Length: 336
Ligand SMILES: [Zn+2]
Ligand SMILES: [Zn+2]
Image (cartoon, rainbow, N blue to C red; front, side, top):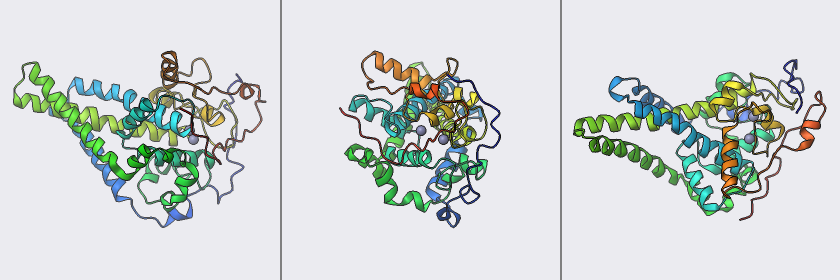
């Protein structure tokens, strides 16, 4: 593995001023009230978790575990590595279960998430990138979600970037907003689960309701907000700050803090250098919990065709700029 090069001076020199900035379609766009109101609502309810009546250690524990369960399994492992990059294959029942877990993160249905992400790889840090932080940090982090993006609403985006995903009727149904029921069901499961647990431990109706609300606020709302900001940080922070193992032709970085918090997604420069690889941590100390999970699935026979970084990657000259526009074409759908 080549050594880190943290002294690369201007990595965006190949971009013109026209290329760095919002696409024209977004300059005149309007607030996306559906998304913006959802984001504000979740943040406000999550803040309730700081009120003593809505706090419980169980809720806090569920929120932290949920970062791995929902964010790690649903978004990293399923949406990103399995669906967007086809880094491995697994039984279809498992893929669908993981996709439903991903849906609970309120980051759109899989086909849309995949289309936006593949477009990011195709045009990383160019004008067509849906969320480049070169516009500004807030835009790359969450601003891009708050406005209507005509480019991303066009059917051509799905046709270009997630045609393979939509060959499965399951994902077509999810795309038609059927997933809202999944969200409401998850609220109920957390709230009722908390109430029943408190009653089973001898609590009365009032304490059961209070405990149920603490589990709901922390297990669903705080966890969702934390997973959002972790995912958004991969889009924003890891295209601005960190070190680079590879001189890729965009601004991706490996960021230690985001690498740990995101269960391995923060080794983003490695990921842009080898997009199809299931393994994002390339050095021994770049902890990649999501890849370790894929390894565990492989050991029990539930993950196959696991793609690893090409040996040519490590052999490439350290000062060579790597072309990483990985998704001009949609990768083949995996076999059964
Ligand atoms: Zn990126
Ligand atoms: Zn990716």
